[in-house]
Image (tube, rainbow, N blue to C red):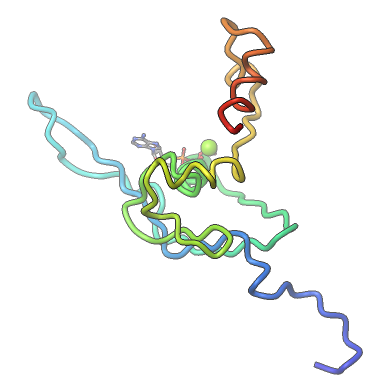
Length: 135
Ligand SMILES: Nc1ncnc2c1ncn2[C@@H]1O[C@H](COP(=O)(O)OP(=O)(O)OP(=O)(O)O)[C@@H](O)[C@H]1O
Ligand SMILES: [Mg+2]
């Protein structure tokens, strides 16, 4: 690269999220004993990098595994395989307690307000509860 070239590619230390070979197979149960008779491969070996300040769009047909991937990255679903690194730290196996510090730094913004806001709660408790939990 010439000296005066503008560097447009982010550097690797700017990585906020690194996903490697992430996969999820949901068990399929059947029969009277509800035994596991198979599996649905929802996510199959996904790797991606997201840099700080980068907006990353994930597009695909319905049922291709976008939501499952997102929920695994947030550790709301346990991956069947692969690794998740957030800000350089492997969060794949962190327990609930050690995940807490990362919970403050990553979140889902649900598109449907009726699915996000509990009609039985006041706005004060909906907005206030997470703030109180996060100190
Ligand atoms: N809890 C679950 N148990 C079993 N199968 C599941 C579960 N959640 C998702 N799946 C299956 O995993 C696959 C991926 O689903 P997912 O919801 O991640 O897709 P999506 O890309 O988000 O779809 P959409 O665009 O419709 O939101 C689908 O075949 C779905 O039926
Ligand atoms: Mg979805």
